[in-house]
Image (cartoon, rainbow, N blue to C red; front, side, top):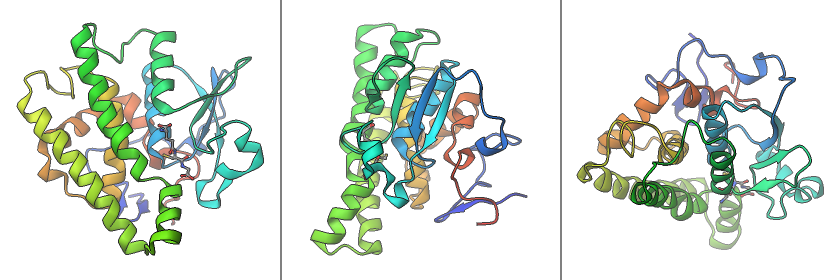
Length: 251
Ligand SMILES: N[C@@H](CCC(=O)N[C@@H](CS)C(=O)NCC(=O)O)C(=O)O
């Protein structure tokens, strides 16, 4: 069986991707792309946009920005995103769109079906609140620029950086678990029985948690929702290990 390892996380891990899916580099290049997506294989923010594009039936031609080589800080990329972060989504004839949540909202308005937000006002607020916990409060503690600063100014080595990530991810996921397990609006997914932006955000953050061997059995509601998402084609095709630049089976 093909085995891909990234840190302690392997592609063989059950229930997380559909068998038989092809890695992006094995697929023919799309000639009918709706967008260009500046992307890197493993990042949570890009992961969110890939899932949303898949759910909306849209196709993006990806331009690979290698975060491990610091390409996000190259003058060419800073002309696309002044903050030097990915993703950036470009629709032909329009300026680049940045910030994954703004991109998700853009895709939701551009292609309303299937909806990624509930039809009622309070439901939408609940879904956006879950997104904010994961994306606004948690994700900013984890990117390479934070690691770089903590290493240079705070004396962090790899072990300290891992402990930092495990601390903030665990605290965030456990607080979300407490919310989801007690709220009757939780269903097979974070909000009811159809996937929303909240599930997209959850799956993107959980991938990072799994790479750090955080035990999802301590957050069983989240674990079950992530497994339900993984069974959906739009989520499965967006899995980081299937993307260009991901470690090959030999790595
Ligand atoms: N809030 C932004 C975060 C974007 C972001 O931080 N992206 C990371 C990858 S997940 C990045 O490009 N980091 C580059 C760096 O830290 O140098 C979003 O959701 O799009």
